[in-house]
Image (cartoon, rainbow, N blue to C red; front, side, top):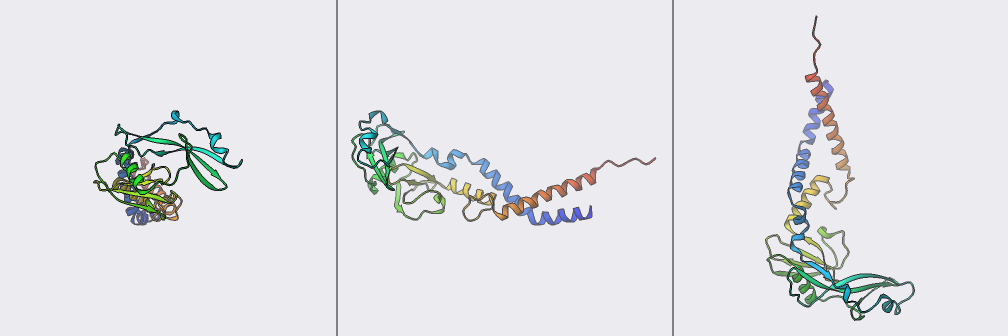
Length: 238
């Protein structure tokens, strides 16, 4: 019992800060609404009119080799829509042939080029459901940590709203791939503290997390043993 008590005390001294951070970060992440963290409330829906298609996949593939792979995608329509809660998108055929990507309008069959900044700004404004205005717009070849799991290049569109919102937009489709706000950044910071991955913020198997979790388990076991010793029923003497 003396060893248990000493181990419990030393483990408590080592763990009390991290255990507090685990409880605090878990509380904050549970308190923040996940839709607001993801920024879903800042995006309008995008609808693609595939029922208006006039060009078939075979019409497109006849201009490519037999090894070409076709998939369906879309591109944000640059024409303003009457309904502010929805945004039209042009149906698009995406073809990969000999490791080269091609995009064709499924309405006309014409080849589509990468969207320019003016079209990106219009697509961003059309998908934005907030109250701010568009600020700086940049084409990124190196992505920041908050979208490190995506592939460059991406357009970063900043809005001057209360949440410092950012849209990360695909330059080929005009679609918003990620929304980042101060709410997301707070959640991400708490997530970093919770899993103890201070670099990529995505690794559950860090040595720090394993070591502290194991120590916290030992801290719990020693505490249970001490409680049992303290409150164990005593045998009555005759």
